[in-house]
Length: 119
Image (cartoon, rainbow, N blue to C red; front, side, top):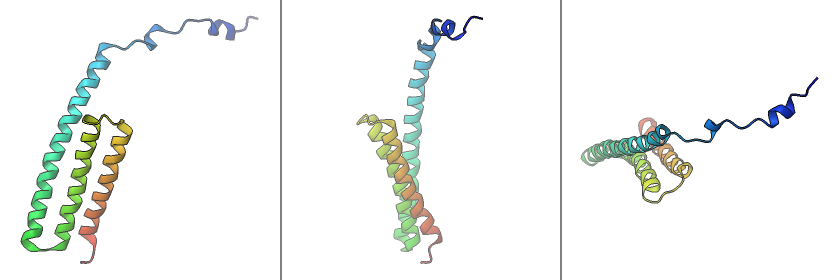
């Protein structure tokens, strides 16, 4: 009986495992462009929401609405800083996700507090 393991050890590695196809490289550029576009839209919409909430706070003086504006501001700031960290400073994607996620959690925490706290 012939052992199978030596035959497998001498078999050449498949060539396709080491090659990068143009479609994969093109997709990466397309995905980056889409992410930048979506971040820009997020910044615009987040800025508009924050602006309207802050104006409502100034008009009414209601602290919960002020906290709501602050919460949306943190969420928007997270998107802005993550985009800057990645595009302008070239930080690693893991660090960028940590920045954005941290500010998003803080922002949503403030939003929840503004909606449910007994003012």
